[in-house]
Amino acid sequence: MRPSTRLLPVMFLAVMWGSWLIVPVTAQSPPKEGFRIGVKVDLVAMDVTVLDADGRPVEGLTADNFQVFEDGNPQEISLFQEADLPITLGLVIDTSGSMRPKLHWVNQSIYSFLNNSNRDNELFIIDFSHDQAELLQDFTRDPDDIRDAIKEKMLAGGGTPLWDSIYLGLGYAEKGRLDRKALLIISDGEDKDSYYSFENVMEQVKTGEIQVYFIGLQEKRGGSLFDLGSFSREKAAAEIQQIADISGGICFFPDDLDQLSDITIAIANELRHQYRIGYNPQRKPDASGFREITVKLKNMPDSTPHFTVRTRKGYQVMEESGSGG
Image 1 (spheres, rainbow, N blue to C red):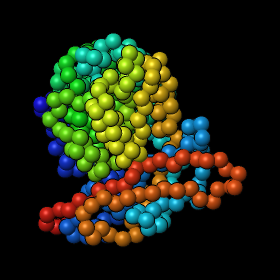
Image 2: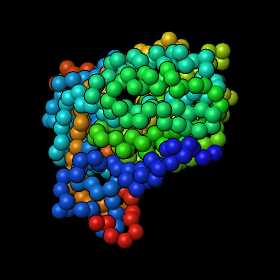
Image 3: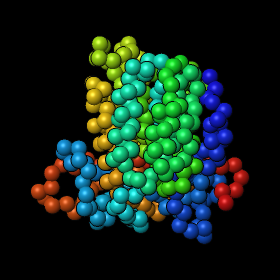
Image 4: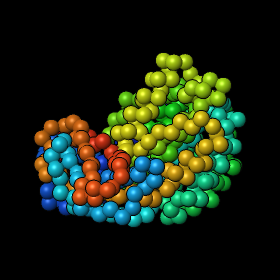
Protein backbone atom coordinates (compact mmCIF):
# COMPACT_ATOMS: atom_id res chain seq x y z
CA MET A 1 0.00 0.00 0.00
CA ARG A 2 1.01 3.61 -0.46
CA PRO A 3 1.23 5.83 2.61
CA SER A 4 -1.05 8.81 3.09
CA THR A 5 -0.40 11.56 0.55
CA ARG A 6 -0.41 14.01 3.45
CA LEU A 7 3.14 12.86 4.18
CA LEU A 8 4.51 12.07 0.72
CA PRO A 9 6.12 15.51 0.19
CA VAL A 10 8.01 14.94 3.43
CA MET A 11 9.39 11.68 2.08
CA PHE A 12 10.89 13.34 -0.97
CA LEU A 13 12.46 16.06 1.18
CA ALA A 14 13.96 13.41 3.40
CA VAL A 15 15.54 11.60 0.46
CA MET A 16 17.07 14.84 -0.79
CA TRP A 17 18.12 16.37 2.50
CA GLY A 18 18.40 13.55 5.06
CA SER A 19 21.64 14.13 6.93
CA TRP A 20 23.84 12.62 9.61
CA LEU A 21 25.23 16.00 10.55
CA ILE A 22 23.16 18.98 11.53
CA VAL A 23 25.87 21.54 12.30
CA PRO A 24 28.11 22.54 9.36
CA VAL A 25 31.37 24.09 10.54
CA THR A 26 32.85 25.56 7.38
CA ALA A 27 32.15 25.79 3.67
CA GLN A 28 35.85 25.90 2.76
CA SER A 29 36.52 22.15 2.99
CA PRO A 30 33.74 20.11 1.33
CA PRO A 31 33.94 16.31 1.16
CA LYS A 32 35.82 14.69 -1.68
CA GLU A 33 34.07 15.24 -4.98
CA GLY A 34 31.56 12.53 -5.75
CA PHE A 35 30.77 11.61 -2.15
CA ARG A 36 28.79 13.05 0.72
CA ILE A 37 28.03 12.22 4.35
CA GLY A 38 24.38 13.08 4.61
CA VAL A 39 24.46 16.47 2.82
CA LYS A 40 27.83 18.22 3.43
CA VAL A 41 29.49 17.10 6.60
CA ASP A 42 32.31 18.92 8.32
CA LEU A 43 31.25 17.83 11.80
CA VAL A 44 29.79 14.49 12.84
CA ALA A 45 27.50 15.04 15.84
CA MET A 46 25.69 12.49 17.99
CA ASP A 47 23.77 12.11 21.22
CA VAL A 48 25.43 9.79 23.74
CA THR A 49 23.65 8.05 26.61
CA VAL A 50 25.63 6.89 29.66
CA LEU A 51 23.73 4.70 32.15
CA ASP A 52 24.73 3.18 35.47
CA ALA A 53 24.07 -0.44 36.47
CA ASP A 54 20.50 0.49 37.50
CA GLY A 55 19.74 2.11 34.16
CA ARG A 56 19.94 5.68 35.47
CA PRO A 57 21.61 8.43 33.41
CA VAL A 58 25.12 9.35 34.55
CA GLU A 59 25.73 13.07 34.86
CA GLY A 60 28.81 15.21 35.43
CA LEU A 61 31.15 13.70 32.82
CA THR A 62 33.39 15.96 30.71
CA ALA A 63 34.92 15.71 27.25
CA ASP A 64 38.03 14.24 28.88
CA ASN A 65 35.97 11.21 29.91
CA PHE A 66 35.11 10.22 26.32
CA GLN A 67 36.98 8.57 23.46
CA VAL A 68 35.50 8.59 19.95
CA PHE A 69 36.59 6.26 17.14
CA GLU A 70 35.58 6.18 13.48
CA ASP A 71 36.28 2.85 11.80
CA GLY A 72 38.66 2.15 14.69
CA ASN A 73 40.62 5.40 14.26
CA PRO A 74 40.65 7.85 17.22
CA GLN A 75 39.00 11.21 16.63
CA GLU A 76 39.43 14.54 18.38
CA ILE A 77 36.27 15.79 20.08
CA SER A 78 35.40 19.27 18.81
CA LEU A 79 31.87 19.56 20.20
CA PHE A 80 30.79 18.71 23.73
CA GLN A 81 27.56 19.68 25.46
CA GLU A 82 26.10 18.36 28.68
CA ALA A 83 22.75 20.02 29.12
CA ASP A 84 19.03 19.49 28.94
CA LEU A 85 18.91 20.46 25.27
CA PRO A 86 15.51 20.55 23.50
CA ILE A 87 14.83 17.99 20.79
CA THR A 88 12.62 17.52 17.75
CA LEU A 89 10.49 14.59 18.86
CA GLY A 90 8.05 12.61 16.75
CA LEU A 91 5.43 10.33 18.32
CA VAL A 92 4.44 7.47 16.00
CA ILE A 93 1.45 5.62 17.42
CA ASP A 94 -0.16 2.40 16.19
CA THR A 95 -3.95 2.86 16.14
CA SER A 96 -4.80 -0.31 14.22
CA GLY A 97 -7.82 -2.35 15.27
CA SER A 98 -5.88 -4.54 17.69
CA MET A 99 -4.78 -1.42 19.60
CA ARG A 100 -8.31 -0.33 20.49
CA PRO A 101 -8.37 -1.94 23.96
CA LYS A 102 -4.84 -0.64 24.68
CA LEU A 103 -5.21 3.00 23.67
CA HIS A 104 -6.18 4.18 27.14
CA TRP A 105 -2.82 3.02 28.55
CA VAL A 106 -0.96 4.30 25.48
CA ASN A 107 -2.54 7.74 25.74
CA GLN A 108 -1.78 7.97 29.46
CA SER A 109 1.83 7.00 28.79
CA ILE A 110 2.14 9.75 26.18
CA TYR A 111 0.79 12.30 28.66
CA SER A 112 3.38 11.08 31.19
CA PHE A 113 6.09 11.41 28.56
CA LEU A 114 5.05 14.99 27.76
CA ASN A 115 4.84 15.93 31.44
CA ASN A 116 8.45 14.81 31.97
CA SER A 117 9.96 16.20 28.77
CA ASN A 118 11.73 19.48 28.08
CA ARG A 119 9.07 22.16 27.61
CA ASP A 120 11.02 23.58 24.65
CA ASN A 121 10.84 20.38 22.62
CA GLU A 122 9.48 20.56 19.08
CA LEU A 123 6.77 17.91 18.77
CA PHE A 124 4.63 16.19 16.16
CA ILE A 125 2.45 13.08 16.14
CA ILE A 126 1.66 10.49 13.48
CA ASP A 127 -0.79 7.63 13.85
CA PHE A 128 -1.11 4.62 11.59
CA SER A 129 -4.41 2.88 11.08
CA HIS A 130 -6.95 2.25 8.33
CA ASP A 131 -3.99 1.11 6.23
CA GLN A 132 -2.20 4.47 6.11
CA ALA A 133 0.05 6.74 8.14
CA GLU A 134 -1.36 10.17 8.91
CA LEU A 135 0.02 13.35 10.46
CA LEU A 136 -2.30 14.24 13.35
CA GLN A 137 -0.37 17.28 14.60
CA ASP A 138 2.28 19.29 12.78
CA PHE A 139 5.35 20.71 14.54
CA THR A 140 4.42 22.46 17.78
CA ARG A 141 6.16 23.65 20.95
CA ASP A 142 2.90 23.30 22.91
CA PRO A 143 2.35 19.83 24.46
CA ASP A 144 -1.36 20.64 24.76
CA ASP A 145 -1.59 20.53 20.96
CA ILE A 146 -0.44 16.91 21.11
CA ARG A 147 -2.89 16.11 23.90
CA ASP A 148 -5.74 17.66 21.90
CA ALA A 149 -4.79 15.70 18.78
CA ILE A 150 -4.86 12.46 20.77
CA LYS A 151 -8.24 13.23 22.31
CA GLU A 152 -9.93 14.59 19.18
CA LYS A 153 -8.37 12.82 16.21
CA MET A 154 -6.98 9.44 17.28
CA LEU A 155 -9.30 6.56 16.36
CA ALA A 156 -8.44 2.85 16.23
CA GLY A 157 -9.14 0.59 13.27
CA GLY A 158 -7.60 -1.04 10.22
CA GLY A 159 -4.21 -2.59 9.60
CA THR A 160 -0.61 -1.94 10.70
CA PRO A 161 1.56 -0.14 8.08
CA LEU A 162 4.48 -0.02 10.51
CA TRP A 163 7.34 0.54 8.06
CA ASP A 164 5.44 3.29 6.22
CA SER A 165 4.84 5.09 9.50
CA ILE A 166 8.44 4.88 10.68
CA TYR A 167 9.82 5.85 7.27
CA LEU A 168 7.61 8.89 6.98
CA GLY A 169 8.18 9.80 10.64
CA LEU A 170 11.93 9.81 10.04
CA GLY A 171 11.49 12.00 6.98
CA TYR A 172 9.27 14.43 8.83
CA ALA A 173 11.63 14.66 11.82
CA GLU A 174 14.41 15.70 9.44
CA LYS A 175 12.43 18.88 8.74
CA GLY A 176 12.56 19.84 12.42
CA ARG A 177 14.39 22.99 13.44
CA LEU A 178 16.36 21.49 16.32
CA ASP A 179 19.69 19.67 15.99
CA ARG A 180 18.70 16.77 18.23
CA LYS A 181 15.99 14.45 16.90
CA ALA A 182 14.18 11.30 18.02
CA LEU A 183 11.14 9.13 17.33
CA LEU A 184 9.08 7.31 19.96
CA ILE A 185 7.09 4.47 18.38
CA ILE A 186 4.40 2.42 20.14
CA SER A 187 2.91 -0.62 18.39
CA ASP A 188 1.55 -4.09 19.11
CA GLY A 189 1.97 -5.82 15.78
CA GLU A 190 4.19 -6.72 12.86
CA ASP A 191 4.04 -4.72 9.65
CA LYS A 192 1.17 -5.31 7.27
CA ASP A 193 0.59 -3.76 3.84
CA SER A 194 3.36 -1.13 3.93
CA TYR A 195 4.60 0.39 0.69
CA TYR A 196 8.07 0.83 2.19
CA SER A 197 10.15 -2.07 3.49
CA PHE A 198 12.35 -2.75 6.47
CA GLU A 199 15.35 -2.18 4.17
CA ASN A 200 14.00 1.26 3.20
CA VAL A 201 13.67 2.18 6.87
CA MET A 202 17.18 0.99 7.69
CA GLU A 203 18.64 3.08 4.87
CA GLN A 204 16.74 6.11 6.16
CA VAL A 205 18.07 5.56 9.68
CA LYS A 206 21.67 5.19 8.47
CA THR A 207 21.59 8.43 6.48
CA GLY A 208 19.86 10.46 9.20
CA GLU A 209 20.61 11.47 12.77
CA ILE A 210 17.43 10.37 14.52
CA GLN A 211 17.31 8.22 17.64
CA VAL A 212 14.55 5.60 17.49
CA TYR A 213 12.83 4.37 20.65
CA PHE A 214 10.33 1.55 20.28
CA ILE A 215 7.78 0.14 22.71
CA GLY A 216 6.33 -3.20 21.62
CA LEU A 217 3.15 -4.26 23.39
CA GLN A 218 2.50 -7.91 24.19
CA GLU A 219 -0.61 -10.02 24.57
CA LYS A 220 -0.73 -11.47 28.06
CA ARG A 221 -2.50 -14.64 27.03
CA GLY A 222 0.42 -15.74 24.90
CA GLY A 223 3.17 -14.00 26.79
CA SER A 224 4.81 -13.38 23.44
CA LEU A 225 5.91 -10.33 21.50
CA PHE A 226 3.02 -9.06 19.36
CA ASP A 227 1.20 -12.36 20.03
CA LEU A 228 2.64 -13.82 16.83
CA GLY A 229 3.91 -17.23 15.90
CA SER A 230 7.51 -18.10 16.68
CA PHE A 231 8.99 -17.22 13.27
CA SER A 232 7.07 -13.95 12.87
CA ARG A 233 7.84 -13.00 16.47
CA GLU A 234 11.57 -13.50 16.10
CA LYS A 235 11.72 -11.74 12.72
CA ALA A 236 9.71 -8.72 13.89
CA ALA A 237 11.72 -8.38 17.10
CA ALA A 238 15.06 -8.70 15.26
CA GLU A 239 14.20 -6.06 12.66
CA ILE A 240 12.89 -3.55 15.18
CA GLN A 241 15.92 -4.14 17.41
CA GLN A 242 18.26 -3.47 14.48
CA ILE A 243 16.59 -0.14 13.76
CA ALA A 244 16.78 1.00 17.38
CA ASP A 245 20.35 -0.23 17.88
CA ILE A 246 21.85 1.45 14.84
CA SER A 247 20.14 4.75 15.71
CA GLY A 248 21.35 4.82 19.32
CA GLY A 249 17.85 4.23 20.69
CA ILE A 250 16.44 1.20 22.47
CA CYS A 251 13.48 -1.21 22.44
CA PHE A 252 11.15 -2.02 25.33
CA PHE A 253 8.76 -4.97 25.46
CA PRO A 254 6.72 -4.57 28.67
CA ASP A 255 4.87 -7.54 30.16
CA ASP A 256 2.03 -5.37 31.40
CA LEU A 257 0.31 -2.26 30.06
CA ASP A 258 0.63 -0.70 33.50
CA GLN A 259 4.38 -0.44 32.84
CA LEU A 260 3.92 1.87 29.86
CA SER A 261 4.04 5.18 31.72
CA ASP A 262 7.16 4.16 33.65
CA ILE A 263 8.86 3.37 30.35
CA THR A 264 7.91 6.63 28.63
CA ILE A 265 9.04 8.60 31.71
CA ALA A 266 12.38 6.76 31.59
CA ILE A 267 12.76 7.65 27.89
CA ALA A 268 11.92 11.30 28.57
CA ASN A 269 14.49 11.34 31.37
CA GLU A 270 17.14 9.74 29.17
CA LEU A 271 16.62 12.29 26.40
CA ARG A 272 17.12 15.08 28.92
CA HIS A 273 20.42 13.65 30.22
CA GLN A 274 22.43 12.85 27.12
CA TYR A 275 25.80 14.22 26.03
CA ARG A 276 26.04 15.96 22.67
CA ILE A 277 29.42 15.02 21.19
CA GLY A 278 30.90 15.85 17.80
CA TYR A 279 34.13 15.52 15.86
CA ASN A 280 35.62 16.54 12.54
CA PRO A 281 36.51 13.32 10.67
CA GLN A 282 40.29 12.97 10.41
CA ARG A 283 40.03 11.74 6.85
CA LYS A 284 37.68 12.55 4.02
CA PRO A 285 35.58 9.71 2.65
CA ASP A 286 37.24 7.91 -0.24
CA ALA A 287 34.37 5.53 -0.96
CA SER A 288 30.70 5.22 -0.26
CA GLY A 289 29.67 2.99 2.64
CA PHE A 290 28.97 2.90 6.33
CA ARG A 291 31.40 4.55 8.76
CA GLU A 292 31.34 2.84 12.15
CA ILE A 293 31.40 5.01 15.28
CA THR A 294 32.44 3.78 18.73
CA VAL A 295 32.33 5.83 21.92
CA LYS A 296 34.17 4.70 25.06
CA LEU A 297 34.78 6.12 28.51
CA LYS A 298 38.27 6.98 29.77
CA ASN A 299 39.98 8.66 32.73
CA MET A 300 37.48 7.14 35.12
CA PRO A 301 38.36 6.38 38.77
CA ASP A 302 39.18 2.76 39.52
CA SER A 303 36.20 2.65 41.87
CA THR A 304 33.78 3.64 39.11
CA PRO A 305 31.01 1.05 38.70
CA HIS A 306 30.15 -0.40 35.32
CA PHE A 307 28.57 2.16 32.98
CA THR A 308 26.81 1.47 29.68
CA VAL A 309 27.50 3.83 26.76
CA ARG A 310 25.02 3.97 23.89
CA THR A 311 24.96 6.06 20.72
CA ARG A 312 24.55 5.69 16.98
CA LYS A 313 26.51 2.88 15.38
CA GLY A 314 27.72 5.15 12.58
CA TYR A 315 26.73 7.08 9.48
CA GLN A 316 26.35 6.41 5.78
CA VAL A 317 28.64 7.95 3.19
CA MET A 318 26.65 8.22 -0.02
CA GLU A 319 28.03 8.36 -3.53
CA GLU A 320 26.77 11.20 -5.70
CA SER A 321 26.66 11.52 -9.46
CA GLY A 322 28.51 14.58 -10.68
CA SER A 323 30.07 17.18 -8.41
CA GLY A 324 30.02 16.78 -4.66
CA GLY A 325 30.07 20.59 -4.15
